[in-house]
Image 1 (cartoon, rainbow, N blue to C red):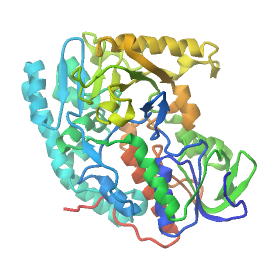
Image 2 (cartoon, one colour; image 1 turned 60 degrees about the horizontal axis):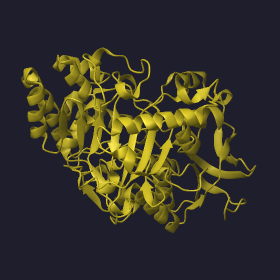
Image 3 (cartoon, one colour; image 1 turned 120 degrees about the vertical axis):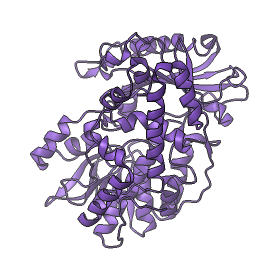
Image 4 (tube, rainbow, N blue to C red; image 1 turned 135 degrees about the vertical axis):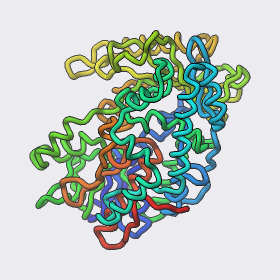
Length: 520
């Protein structure tokens, strides 16, 4: 438990030092509350933390970020938390490259060039491509200046005003509400390959806003990387200011139970048997773990439990980390995220998600973070991180870890290397460091069920619902990617700030503003 005084009653205890927990704790501490963050691992940051292998530095989280530009949501978030702009966020352009055995396609902030390239590949869809791109240009123009705020923090009247403003300014939100990417793309296009590519790897029952988000980011020019240290710079900055404001953190401290008294959260019980009392509890942890393990179904409303059990998880991921003695920049790579499709069938649009499993029939993402951040690798060498969907069940047997786990892991890693060699020639003979994370690895290190990096799967149906950060237990709130506004580093930072404001509002120290403000 470190230097934590077990006799101290805290204003708030936060479970988990991911970015949601850190942002929540930082704001609460900044406002003068006594705060303790309990983190089960030895290092804060959740997925946003680097690890080193023989001189190479890797990060499990995506190296690229949106909302960190001059007009992004994170400018306001950093101001709210009192954080200085000491981290340098640099624009990433091109944003990503789509590679198949038959053609390459670049998505840059020059969205007109992207449109021309698409038309060159799919000339029969020329008018539809133009109409589709124009549709998202209109949306981006209309959402400029709108700030995301939690519905939990505003009055009914403000919600009605917000709804009216949203419908007036962004009609697509109402028109596409609850619509899948499949439905909208079918209404625009006929070519199955074009529709497949424009999902950018999202499941076919995902919301159209999930599918179109790379295009929206490209139009906004909203895609950045962290200079020098990489993604690890974020939790380091947050933790430093959290402590400066008086916040406490206890690493290697696993919370086993949320203490409930008279239907209210009153603290937490650790795996060491220590009970820590607090007025409020904020869980930055897994949705299943929070309610079904830390609380228990018997203390929760039946309807809430039923809906919890019906929700789907975001897809499990296998990531292979390589340190190579190749000069990737000299080979022509520029650090853009690569979407690689090893094979594409004649009609990929009609294939079902998760039907069978073969890496070659799916999509791989290839990151070469050290091209933009040379500090992540020794001079003249580079990092490569390759991620792909791999079912969780492949690594298990009857609910336990498969006795062939290591063999399965190595077989998949080698298969990924063989496939990636078509993108990076000579890769297999230049590997100096090799490590891999399976869905079980992520589950063990982050306590996210099946290693779900984006929390609950955001289907079109789920996207149309407004998630609440409140819970059926009084004085217990949620932060992180399992709650509003969803997955991704910027969104979990916003969720942490919103959770803190809910606590502050309850303590009558804070009067929140509207969920979405027009700052223009």
